[in-house]
Image 1 (cartoon, rainbow, N blue to C red):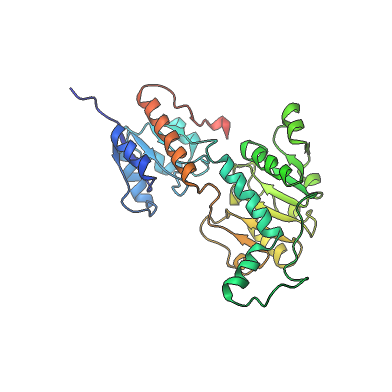
Image 2 (spheres, rainbow, N blue to C red):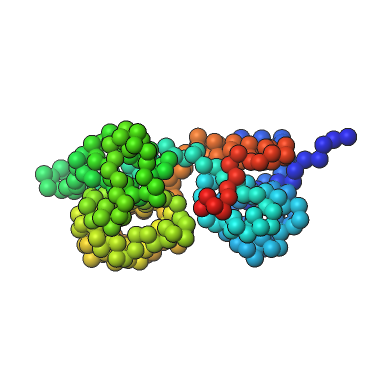
Length: 328
């Protein structure tokens, strides 16, 4: 008698190798298009699946979880961030939630450095003039940016990604400062030659570049609010490869337009895919479409973690990357 396989619904297109392996292991419904599911489609999927595999584009709130079928026992998120899932309500209803931490650390740290360089060296402005055919030749005073060597980098959130950013920034000759919920162990802090600031206000007022690398939680919403942004030096640059909600985007936009902040590099936005049109008009702002984790290797590794979480659950064990409300 064949063993009954778990019913798995995947909400977005995943790398082909991941989808193929899922098909081999589970009774899986794959997505034909890469368009996000509607709210009604998500609820319907949650009613018929044992396991749902969503992404950050799938908002799963308490009302939707209340409509889930009795068979849904695991939400195996494709991605590290779970702020789009009501983890507490899921746990109350006996639904486990897992994620894929640690996979995109290096990819996101690389993109953070790319944004720092792009803003400080005015790379998009140079690219635009070359693509337009308006370049009239080299000039001693054209497109003058600034060195990052010797500058102070303030890292907001010193977890895996924050530490990876610190290692890269040190290689560029930057001085590392950081603010975190908990101070790093002395040996880690020493290896990174990092200066800890218990007061975020004090750190913000002293750094040349601030990099947001903390997750979005209720306690980090608008952590860089209008008052705190005003503490930045006019020559400072803001970079965000974490979550848009950590920065008050309207306040940031106003200050950039007024010249109160020198520039910004943003891979994430408060409105997710709805970009403030005033941001797009600014030459001192680099905007990317959430590309921080966009490498082939990273996406496949994320899929492999999802597979391990589901397979471990199917074997009757706790998924290795289970997310608990107390972790958020």
